[in-house]
Image (cartoon, rainbow, N blue to C red; front, side):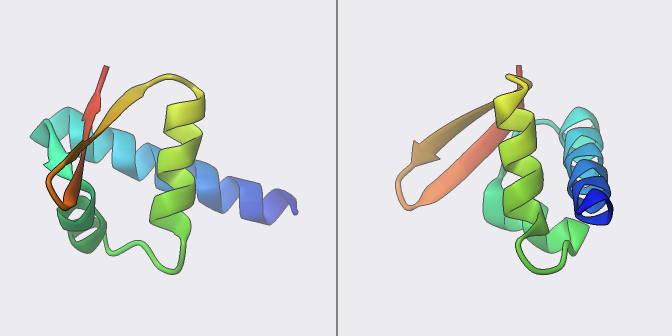
Length: 68
């Protein structure tokens, strides 16, 4: 279980750094560019949302993410 939490935390860190360097992004573009495996992009984004570090919005059919 600890290993899984570490992987999720690392994914959250990658997402945070990506958004910090690139600004707002669609979730699908960010996920593709970071090449996170399985559900780790979803889990990492959820981690950041729970910590209130990101704003998530729906624009048409896509989901956009940015740092607060």
